Image (cartoon, rainbow, N blue to C red):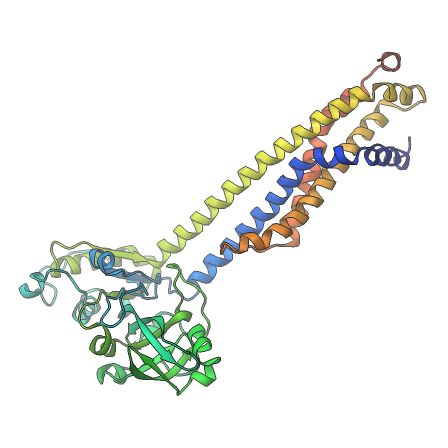
Length: 447
């Protein structure tokens, strides 16, 4: 029997049982949609991780005092970028942005490192300071840069805002932009002179500039009121996207470190020191030496030290684990769908035993009967796979509404169709073989 004749028989049989075909394909529909969404969510997760860390220096190490971060709500941007955790407005408590620290090559340093002030040890809580930053810069070798930062939240007014809104305020040093790989859309970042003189200048994140002034160019040179005090906008950052902590510099306002302490937070802050290792391969040794320096200044304190590479790896592993779980779920759904097709074909073979006997009596070979039932299984699974792809396209907006990034692709759709057809064909082979193995006389006499 020619292939065209076989396909015509398949079309006639399936078109007469449309509802059964749809019900039989439900498992394949779900499996196909799942496969497509698994690949799309996995790709989206990888792109999200890449975007989160694209602005971070691979040798960055963040140092913060954990108990302060918990007590005062500090958080972290991630490696190379200071923490922007929230805090109460007007003298609120800040958190560090993030950072990193180079390798020190191990070894002990002998006596004390710089200061070891008893009055500092007697404080109720430890607050990292510029003196600690300088200690690390002096006593830890192979560092390319060091900075310190903190964050808080404050009521902010200006531009087109009709009423005050709360924004993240970041107190940073002049080198923070270079450490965090920030670039300016317009203007310049905060300077050392701004910090030393405690001048009221600020740099806006791209989203803040759009919300307040509609554009970066309108914001440049204008004034915003932070905690009811005027700050001149000296520049606007380019859009950077989110970072590991889920907080974006796009939504932050950056002010000089000392200015923030004088006018907003006072000394009640929880800074993060960010250091950059000169060699990313020596980060572990650098962290070990940082611990030695800090232990000399604060013998009984435990600091949180995290590096960019570890966070990037953890984020990637988390995404990979999620993708594996989704793939496992899709495989289970496909197996269930394949079993459904197998069961329906077994029933179909039993119902059509007389038909099979007639076809064999008319001269159809065992191969023809096998191909007919295989084609039916493949067509049913293909229909299910196509409907699954359509279902995935419809479900995507719902998934994205939960802040999950989904990156659909033609490759994902193609693989969904291929897996769907393969599943139907594999699970349909045995029923098709059973049908082709029937003895014509027995089949004709079947009731």
